[in-house]
Image: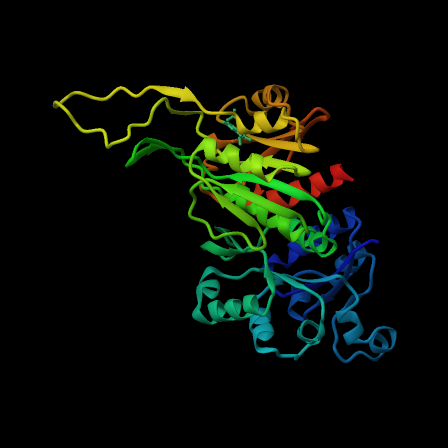
Length: 395
Ligand code: C5P
C-alpha cells in the first residue's frame, strides 16, 4: 500500500527546500498533500507546491469550499505521517503550547498521526531558552526531530539552525514510515559494535578509536523495524539502544564467543573495529619499569577474525554484512574483503576523513552485484537505509 505524508510548510527562508523534498518524496512513490502557513507563501508559491505535489494546497482554516471537500480534522488524519518543513521558531512555539490559530497549527493539534519536524531558524533563535524549552516539550510529546545542522545560514551567521537537507528529511520520513510496518519483524539480527580491548597486563591494553556509534545506530534501527536484535558490544560510552539485547565484551575472543552463542540468526552485521592482534601472553602482573631507557618488547599473535569465522561456519546466517574502514583505495579493498571474508555485503567507508567518533558517515555498498555509493548522511540515516536495503534483499 502506498504511503503518504501531510507536509506543513512553515514561513522561513528554508521553505524553498520543501519543493525539493516534495520532488524526492514523489520520486519514492510517497504521496504528498501540503498545508502552507501565511508566512510560507511569502517564500514559495502555492502554485509551485501544487504543481510538484499534484494536489491542491491548503492554507485557510475558515474556507467553506475546503471544509466541504475535506474538513481540517480529516485532513490532519489523511496521511501516514505529518512533516513540518521548515519548523520555524513560531510553529514550534505554537505546537508546544497547543495553539490552534491557523490551519497548520490546528492540524498539528488535531492529528493522531506521528509528527516529524525539521527545525530551521537563526542560530540565536535556536539557542534561545524559549526554543530550548519548546524543543524539550515537543520531544517529550513524542514529536520526532530531524536536524538542524550546523553551517552557514542565509542570515550570514554560522552555527546550528540550518535545516536538514531534503535527502536527510526524506531518510527520516522513510525511516518513520517503514518503522510503522516493521519490515524486519520475525528476523533475528546479530550486530557487533565498538572497539575491542586487548590486555597487555592487568592495567594496560591496546585498542582503537571506534566509538561504536554506527553499530549502535544499526542496532537501534533494526529494533525499531521489528527485528530481534543482539548487540555484542566492545567498551563504548553510549546509552544502551532501546529494545536491544546487549552483550558487553572486552576482547576479540570474548566477542567471538558471544557471537557464537547468539547463533542462529538471519542476519549478522559486523560493525566492530576488532583489534587485529592481541598479546601472545598478557602479563599476569603489571609490567614494571626496570632500568631507565629500557623498554619492554611486546609479542603479539593474531586475533580470530570474527566475521570470517561466522561467515564460513556451519551456522552461517542467511546474510553476512561486514564493514571496511580504509584510508585509501576504499572500494578496491572492500571488493577483495568481500571474497576473502565470504560476506554478502561490505559497507566501505573512508576513515581518513574523520569518521571515527563523529555522527556522520559516507559509505559505499559493495556486493557481487556492484557498488552503490551513498551521499554523506548521519550514522542514524546510514543505519535506517542499510536495514531497509537488507529487508528488501531478505524478501
Ligand atoms: O579485516 P578488516 O579488519 O578490515 O575487516 C573489517 C571487517 O571484519 C569488519 O566488518 C569487522 O567487524 C570484521 N572483523 C572481525 N574480526 C576481526 C577483524 C575484523 O569480525 N578480527
